[in-house]
Image (tube, rainbow over the protein chains, first blue to last red):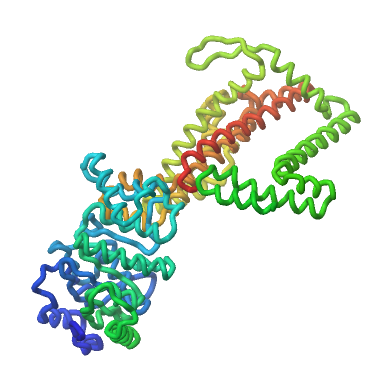
Length: 282
Length: 315
């Protein structure tokens, strides 16, 4: 059942990144039959804050197929947010590279839509203004931008709130705006960093269902970072489990379960236990 | 029962103008506690109709406080000669006198003369260095504040200079105002501009520094790539609350600077205060002191309205 088993020995191997890199290029990534939307190729990241350099990521290696929903889980300090930022182009990797749609990532751009835990909405813009923002940066005429933005607002179920300001919305509604805004510019990849970490459990459940519907409808590739194992198993086709100190991919677990997934389901529980075990060990 | 109106006011908060509904519950609770503890009469009133008590009581207190102040002032003035402490009546008479008396105002740029009430002329003369000084200082202060808040390199290069220059009171520059440009309108304008500059610089700088990183990153992921676009579309609107606070603060502070600068001889309200007192017409001095207060209150009220409209998104 376990997906890609990245040779646990490599993790403890004191041999430098070059060794694991060579090994990684030799191993085939899973789902190599589907076109790869994201390739994380031997990514390492060292921060030099003050005195001691800190190795946040080391030899991180995995790929995401087009249209796939992949979750990244791991204990705090495993570098999953750093990895998110590297893929988003907000941090430059010290080693290796990330390719999205075959092109190396060189900075943030419209091919990767970002959704943050704290929403990152522009508070001075209305819901419509937020969703329109990315469309305004292109040459598309105002009328079509408006139409597209309204479509996206409808997609996330916020019709009727076009003229509301973010301060007037609940956390769940804010995050729907964040998702609509990211989708408006039609990115290849939706990058989400603990997007539902700030909403209550009930809202989170509802948002999970809605996100899966949107995913099915739009066919986007989704890369979703979370520390919540249950959330990951609820959503993902595959769960990438990371280990800390420095952050590496410990293992990738396939979740071949029909959606929507019931948490009481035996198979679901088995997957959850499997991932939990991996997270605990790491 | 008395809880109901305040509950309603809370509910209305969301779409109404924030200042109006938020005042109401506080006033209700104040009226209520007074009714219970202070006097039976107030309690009876709040029982009759809580809404009536809400509006009347605070207003009544304000009137009583003001009347008390005027009475004390009046009584104190009786014991002193007018030139030492002019009473409220003398001041009112002098106010009327300043409105009736005519003076000549030379319209700037046009150069034509106009005969206007003396009070208006003095006010216009003060505005003649207040407004340009405020405008120039505000624009330059915001420009440098945004630039330094945005660019780490510029910040590092200029922080030592701004740290040293900022604590110097605007009025300390008067020596240079005099030797460089003389103490007419231009000199006073210069002093006012320095005052406005630092206030706006500091607020704009802090505002830009405080713009959340998320917002810039999201904007970059949505296609904003050059610095100028980022400043215009994200940084300035995000920092607008602080920038507007800076402008409002400088609107007030610059009146203080104006008056002080005029004490050195530039024509206007401040000069009138000092020259009237030198002629022992202290009642006229008080008139102009009050004019400053009124002009400040009016401009602050006006700017608050603008601010509330611009920052409607803060809800």
